[in-house]
Length: 289
Ligand code: GUN
Image (cartoon, rainbow, N blue to C red; front, side):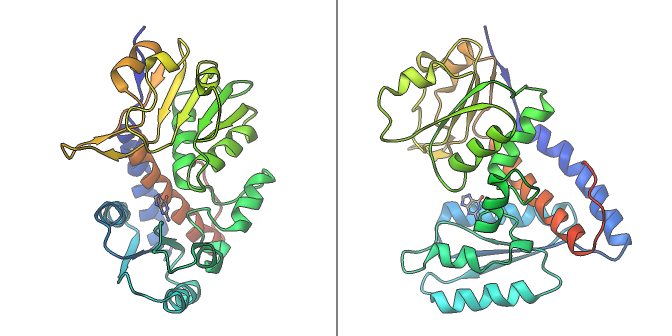
């Protein structure tokens, strides 16, 4: 068996085309969705990532403001900036790129963002609402994965989903969101014993550990759906995922590549959340695009 490759980039392009029309309609109503992206320091990977977010936002017609702060910025200065953005009526979504430098308290910064502008879905209010199965901003990478399942009509109900990784950004929320879709979810992490016993029993395997080639064809069940969230830069400068693509391709029924898989969907969901935030503020009904 050779898996169908889910090209997130193609799905993302279709969705962004629909969004471009939606944003044009909103602009006609006088609503210009605005996103503020804040980055502290000059880590090349993070910078390239936020510049990608900024460019994609502008391309669909959002007003995007990329704010680059020096590594030495104080906690107080960063909190002041968040406060200003909270009160800026042209800003509907605020994203502070993680990780932040060690001298900054990440939780305090996230909690300072108004939940109504929390397009990352990281605020405890957003997380609480998600846990309760209520409508809220959902974190972008998990929402991108969920959208892939929906677009590919991959059913989730009763499926055994195994999530490798328990980060705030991906692992924890994707498990909860799939539980909300009636999947049976197992979380595995660096302390899990006999990992293969879990991975080989997964109908859907989500890998978000940040280790190149961590999972190979031997670790997965025939016909499994394999979602590779890893983005690892290897020695030759290219990007690779957490899954050994060639061997997994032979066993899986669906698999996402790296690059061109989950990554483009993540950015697309950020745009989606920002548009939703602008609509909520202006009391424009949601539509299912
Ligand atoms: N760092 C890596 N991914 C993300 C993300 O989705 N949001 C933020 N704020 N930081 C990140």
